[in-house]
Amino acid sequence: MTKLSVNINKIATLRNARGGNVPDLLKVASDIQKFGGQGITIHPRPDERHIRYQDARDLKSIVYTEFNIEGNPQHNFIDLVLECKPDQVTLVPDAIGAITSSAGWDTVKNQAYLTEMIQEFQRNGIRTSIFVDPALEMIEGAKKTGTDRIELYTEAFAHQYSAGNEKGITPYVESAVLANELGLGINAGHDLSLDNIQFFKENIPGLLEVSIGHALIAEALYLGLENVVNMYLRKLK
Ligand SMILES: CC(=O)[C@@H](O)[C@H](O)COP(=O)(O)O
Ligand SMILES: NCC(=O)COP(=O)(O)O
Image 1: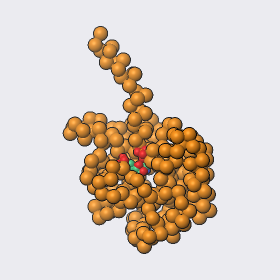
Image 2: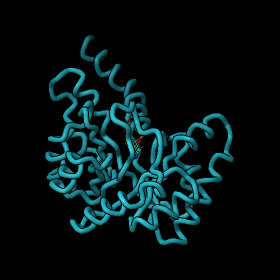
Image 3: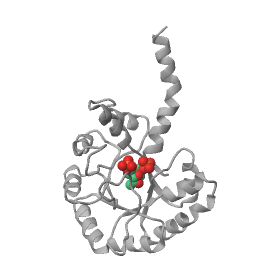
Image 4: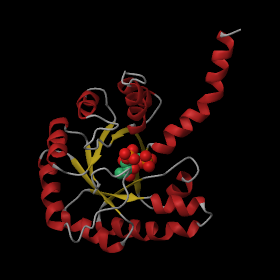
């Protein structure tokens, strides 16, 4: 079975747009779990433009499924993760100010650094995952860091699939086969959606977890829109 971890960054984006507490991030996280979501993912960024560091602390007592915190292991992030002790930390090599994640780790060049980070989090009982492009040498490099899992960066797959190119899945399948051989757990995320998730799942052996945010929240808005417009119309009769 593949677990669905819902990334709630976009709920925080909407909340922050007005400065109040609508929508209520904690209530949304609770409801997602009530509706069957099997995990909550957040990706606090240094500028706190969506998830604030305090949100991570507050979510700790709300999330009873799997709590996954993603980010670049800079000092503040490391301290936050060690304080919150989520079930899983996913290390992502984001540049400061990047609009969103745009690459996986070079696990060969950064092997010593990643190994040190992985050991620190594992010593504190936190499962680790490293965000990687679907390239065999990056999977092998990840294995050498001692990480529990990798997260396959799926933007390229999503882009090619939406353009009608199903062959874009090939490097992901090859990477997953190798990861399985090496005993690495496999997560995946970025731009997964209702449109592409089934094809991805059916082709990736041993896919343990997907984290989905941007498309899922956009789809939820759209699929709820007719209902809400009609609820307003009824009140205005
Ligand atoms: C790690 C990853 O793939 C990202 O998709 C991320 O978690 C989303 O971050 P933003 O919501 O800031 O774009
Ligand atoms: N790790 C990927 C994630 O959490 C969500 O990515 P996206 O669905 O917002 O692109």
